[in-house]
Image (cartoon, rainbow, N blue to C red; front, side, top):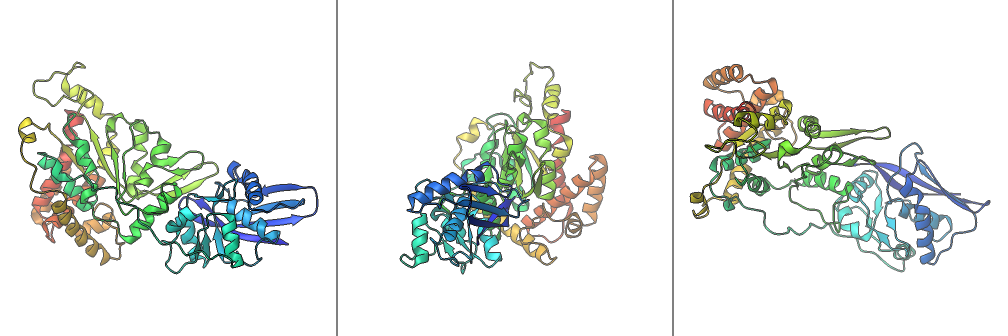
Length: 511
């Protein structure tokens, strides 16, 4: 007789069905796990054996075979411990034979029989709900699983003994409740920044349309402070976005205590990050920083200090909103719709724009050009807003804080985002579409300028040698500016300001 328990294997954030099959037969005493299992799954034999002994059960002196079907699907991770243990318990009669038929199971076992947290509970719960199954998961992950559906049967035991008592009727486990993580204090506010009005304006435009942004200025000008305050003016996550973001965090094992965070991600990798760390990959094709920033902000400080090949790996996810990791035994796709904010100094010494400064490496223009050349033109072409951030004077620092902060700016951003949501919903696009992410054919329609604006962008496209991508990105920024002003038509004024943000990019490269 074969005992079956349902579980999952992860491919990106997708949970594929896996059938754990256990057969106990006469023969040489053995405990074998087959079905293309990795090292962590193969080692589950010892964890399962010790956990069962600690729970008062002894394995029979027979041949135990565990098959993980489909056999050609790679199985990775420690979450197979619990389904294997429960299948063995069902095979030896320690659990009713039909008790596990309606559940998908995942969890890691400690040697004393307790069930410890694992990654990927939220996507596993959503996949189980789609298959009409309940979920059995560790107690620490129960609040995470409860988000999948309000009417879904979720069991979150702390140990094998507690789960066995539940099925025998001697102990009843309550369904866990969905949980939101504590906010961790207020977000940094724009009111903390004195001066830098042009940079704040660019930050508002970037937030309103979801545009990529590059700050260029000397050290200490406040570039990192500005970037850190972008999340404070972004609209809150919608329920759909919350689940998308949380599923990636769940697979990456970054949800603590089963509580989801309703804040947009803000990822800030160091410039020494490898390509696998930034876009994903490694031995098990794990999500990278671009995927962990999905729905939020990816901030790259000291942009030219990143390895050029690593920076160029951002180009494809910036365009498509997803990243595909192809390996010999993996082909995984992760969502990666992030908003890039980058900061850089004008040159390696950082002072090239100061009046009267002479760089030791030669003419200031040459130093700036060599430093800026570390960023490829195709990557720069994907950045909509490029702002020069000047040094803050002492006169600015002694002024009182500005009257307007993140709350007022966030209200204008929310109004502009609402106009975009309404506009694109009428055209059958998704609710999370912004001016920066809508298809090019749609932006040509909704951002068609008036006669004066058409003449301006035609002349600018020739004089500035705008690529097709640069042309469309200029239209996107102009559409966002019109949304901030509450206007239906893109006018010459909006296009002129949008073009000014692209023109500033050429200065570091050409002097």
